[in-house]
Length: 444
Image (cartoon, rainbow, N blue to C red; front, top):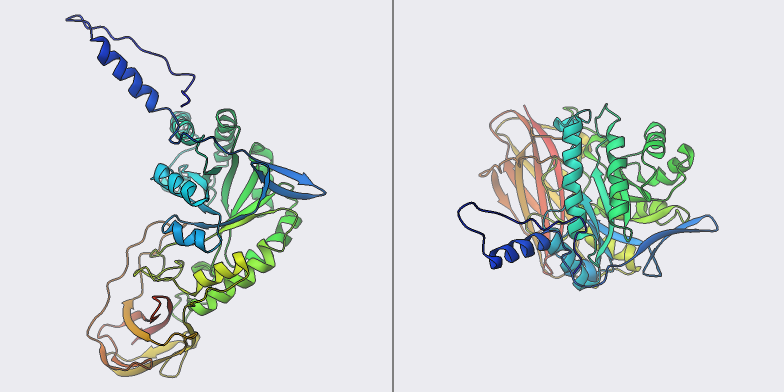
């Protein structure tokens, strides 16, 4: 057990009576425990080495390429699939995540949340910046020696919609502090994409980081070329990547984004990973795919590798293939076609209020014998955030289905109120693996 070297024993005095020695010892012990590490095992040591122009993480003397996900649910399944790391965005539940990861042989890129200008934080406020730094100090001291720790992720997209570049001074100040407190683990900061201006700012103002972390979606395949063009010389990792983002997707005539099916996403994950993360043998340190879990962001299915029910989608199978070179024995179903009134999601589906319509889905079972098809109608979400901010899920509209069958066809009545909606289909096989798709439509 290591103790914070700055800890000082404080003697208390009461004018009424002296505090008993036992109470003083308990108080001192409590203060020590608050600043000690959460695991008694020896910390691992991670460095980055460059050999013949190629960067590589060396962890406890062995080469280490990050095969990770963002999110920490069901880490047992993750370890079985060939992954080796998880990423968090903050230190919430850090001890639980670190301990479980260590038990399963996984590492953790531990997020250290730094406040955003777009949320009202002022990086010209020296007192607020100093207070944030001290809060980070406490977190570093608490977890720095955990054997599952791989890297500290200082902030997540603090550059998103920002104007005050003094944030990079704050990040560098924190990075220098982390380097002094924890010489064993790597340090990075996470950006929302990367371009010339941003890369130049970080190279100049945040030299202490060991590598750059980039969140990118539709532009992932071009990232190695971008890194070369902007002249970024250090290594990098991709710390969020996945389907095409809702802000960069094609839109309907009424200007809502069109979501890829889970089958299309599975193909996109494989293609972009192979063209970018696996292809850059010189500067890429690996990646964290998004999202190992489920969340409402534009829709309930856009970014999660799992449905709200907890069923894994085809994207989970795709990640196992990317990490191991082999598909799982029991695969998720695929959606080969999904239409409403003979039109796809890209065909601008308009319907009249309270009129009758049909939808059908074609499925590839991948040797599964039993398939369940479920339908859901949602109004288009109006709670659209930025940068992954929390959003409220629209409420399901019930009572619209007139008839449905097991083969994947449904007859329904259009909603009474005019406006934008989506029809979702969920295909679940006997192995509790799923595929999903949705079609936006507009009621006139």
